[in-house]
Image: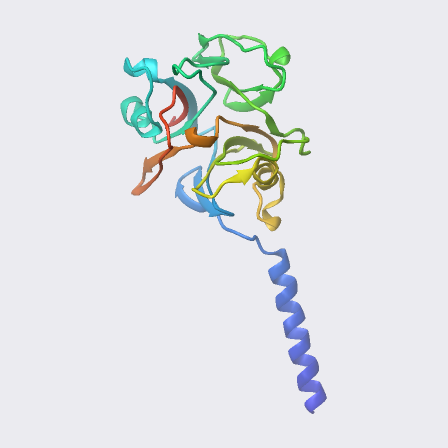
Length: 245
């Protein structure tokens, strides 16, 4: 009888361990239809359905300012979410391609290890600069780098530690926008979260792009009774913004 009890207890423990190993390491919290939030591994992240939400690009120039914050750009543009975007010079002049509704706001930069994130026909893409084709149907485009995930694989990345921000594309076409909290990470650590499956506490992205991190890393969200602000240590020149369609 005692052996039978031990066998049952061992079997139940094994079953629980098996279920736990198959369960997601974290959960996405639904904020609105087609929009989810999670916090894992010191990273704030939003998962966005591009069929229900429009991504755009806004700059400090749109506010008649030389620089701004993510919260300023969100509030002035009416966006529910804004995250720091591409690089800029010490004088806060944007560096790299910026497009909005088919119009070029800033020209392409020639740096080969940068890439272009763009939205076309409600679908996200990340491509090298020489593979990007200008078209009036492009809703938004922003150039930054390096790429964190390329066709499901993580490239060789620098080991420097800093605050990070990035944007990724999941297998089903959903977009993940993520920013670290005050805890710095290497580029490889940050990329690993985008690349890993949800079961391994990752975002399961097939492609991902690093945004201008370090002191610029910041995000602002305010919608459906949920508000989040991770302020940066410096002001920025441009941001990726999200609006309900």
